[in-house]
Amino acid sequence: MRILITGASSNVGRGIIPRLRAAGHDLVLSDILRLPDAEPFVGLPFVQCDVQAGFGLERAAQGCALVLHLPAWHGIHWRDKTEIDFWRLNVDGTFWMFQAAVAASIQRVVFLSSQAWHGHYDKYGFTKRVGEELCEYNRRNHGVRFVAVRPADFTPWGDSFVRYGTRLLYGGVDREDVLDCIQRSVEKLAQELPPGREAEGIVANAVRANAFTEEQIENWEADPLAACERIFPGSRALVEKYKLNIERKPGLSNLGEGAAAIGYAPQRHFGTFLDELKRLDAEGGEAAVRARRCDY
Image 1 (cartoon, rainbow, N blue to C red):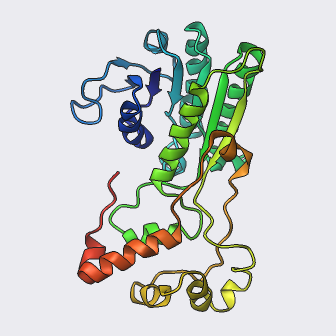
Image 2: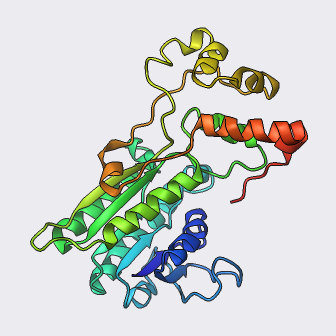
Image 3: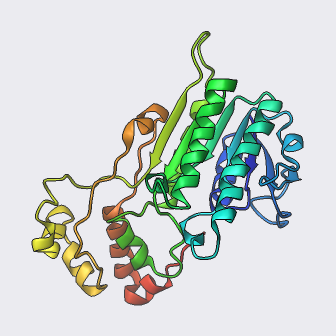
């Protein structure tokens, strides 16, 4: 399937391009700036576009069967970007993407939304709500099938592997799980609808896997170390050695119905982080843990 990826230089773009190429899809890349002559962009057609005004999008969309729409300002841009910035990229950019898709007879869209959708009236969450409404509008009026992917916090964790792992106990999600969710969304939309079936609109939460039940964390704050040890045997020594801040009670992730609809099941959580931390600690101690870097 020929896929247009808007915002190809983004975090998700750089991660999903190799996956989709390996799956045999033909890709067309677009971004507001020219892409570097480096992996993963080498050898792929590129159309320079400003989605905020729609310039170049119709040309990029020609011949494609699906749009993977990634451009957005996110929570990490909160201080640097104004309400106008958020609206122009997150809302206007999504509007013009759909205009180009409909003009090119594209009836499949994967839209990168966010768990910030729940922040109904903040400048980020509100724009994601409007973006999802544009998905639904185009489903109802133009028969565009869509999956809106709502990732939790997967922003780069820099040089702190420990901070990354602690986030997985709370609101964080591993980037690979987010990419899994997006790839599953593409695969779902690649399937042909049975004759007469109405175009579907799916919302998929890209969140961490639940490694515990509500009962297991009920009295967490009374003794976090003991609670953690019961769920993850052998964790106490690592938590104490690396001073992991686990005082606050964790919560459960809500996969929702959309995950099952696209066949998505996250694989990574605080326990898988502890396994990697244990391995690094055994192989090289604190130096090896400090040397572990974020690869995106």
